[in-house]
Image (cartoon, helix red, strand yellow):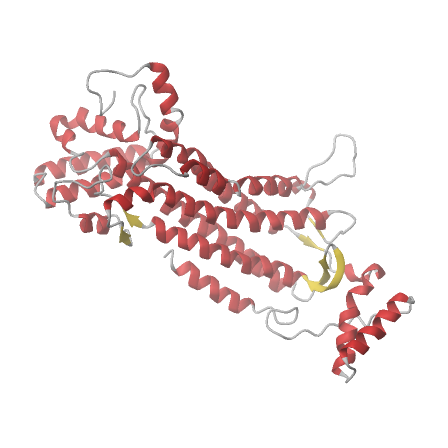
Length: 430
């Protein structure tokens, strides 16, 4: 059962190879296909290609299908090629020839483009909301532990004093920058391609502004060829956003794995949130964050997969594009799962508030003591030399007093300013 059938069915092996698991992936597009179709037929009625009574019957039938989808009972029948075919066949079975009028003025090319745009727009909303929840968690922890010092490292060597407030706050602000990339991908996604048909427009007097408004797109892909070219480009933009967030979450997961190690002992989690060993009874492994790190590393490959899949394709639609769903659909789900799991784990994090009592961290304060001498009038190079000699001769005794006041430092985290930045970014998704 194929909408494009001309009396000759393809070989079963060919069909299996070309369709793959597209029917399963298409189920995630079902709601959007119906919503896009309702907007399309309302436009057709407005330009005289459907009668008002035909529109009413079609909209009613499509809303019935929408209820089936929302109830989780929608299926693509065996032998039906894709989601678009299934919905059109359902309409034709119920309404006869009226159901056959729904496709006037469009191609499956722009139909699937609309479905994907609407789907990805919602996925980007979900990603933004999950990232915002995690941001709020980081900010709350930053405020709660702003006065608890911890070692800062460069080259994995003890360097200067840091704080848990600074550590948590750093990841909060990093998420703001990541969401700027998500926002840019959202802007690219939030454009209406409907009316581009197979990529070269239509001789019907389609009202593309009307469908843009009905589907609440912020703008339109005006040039019909550019609209078709947006397939692949949109997914690539989203993949960059996914990669940015995955990089941040993966980096944090690595920190957690390291800081949970007994050699560090900076943080911990309740036993029920860790895993054990089949042979070593003392083990409390950070499996959640190790899996998170691995998943986030994989997510950073998505942009490369999409770039290679879409490289140097000829102008117009090519069937290669179908495989983009295989790559992107699981990626958005995995990213949201990782962010939500990170938020859940952080809800239960335990912070060691006495880390710096250990004398092995005494050298953290050498820069503080150098700066203290400089503030008292000693030239910097002289102060540096004095403290350096004390270290070399084993005579260094840290003051262990920290006084940082500039913006973004231990004593002035600027969390409210960072929250203001996030508010501006999130406004784009509202």
